[in-house]
Length: 169
Image (cartoon, rainbow, N blue to C red; front, side, top):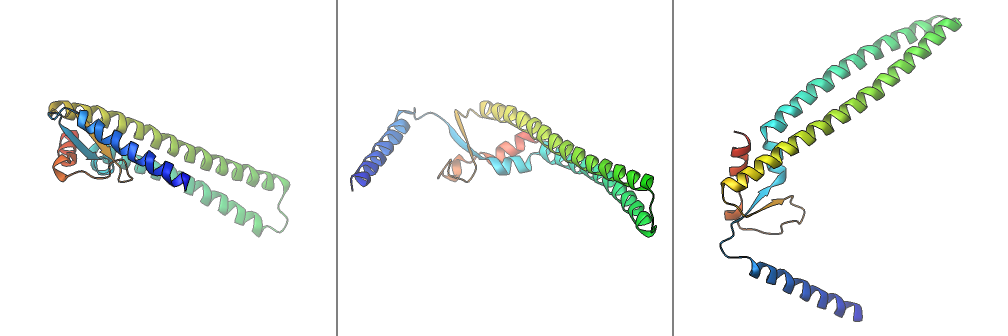
């Protein structure tokens, strides 16, 4: 019972502080929000870099698939030979290790490239959004993720469409 009273009291205090914080904002402040996910997914630079990444990953996959076919073919040759020699088995083992190494290197390269592209995209997007806010006289620009960071705002405060147009110029 005491815990419930304390939680209720804490909730009331939190709401009071929240509302008093909004009351302290000058009424001339221009506030807007942007849907982060939509902005990011419609950002031309992101789309272009995503396509580049897919091309790079495809090239790596083709190389890896070729190495796999060669390895499999050699494995079938060894299997067809009833008494494969030690050299053949060593060569197959080397080829298998080379393939596994290629697979790991390509995976890591794909991850590194995706991270690098993502960082470049967000750096550029953040700069463009800052410029957008300044050019449009926006004092506070909130980013929403749809996960509770902005619980509600009227549509008139939504600057997502305008921001998408500006960042894609």
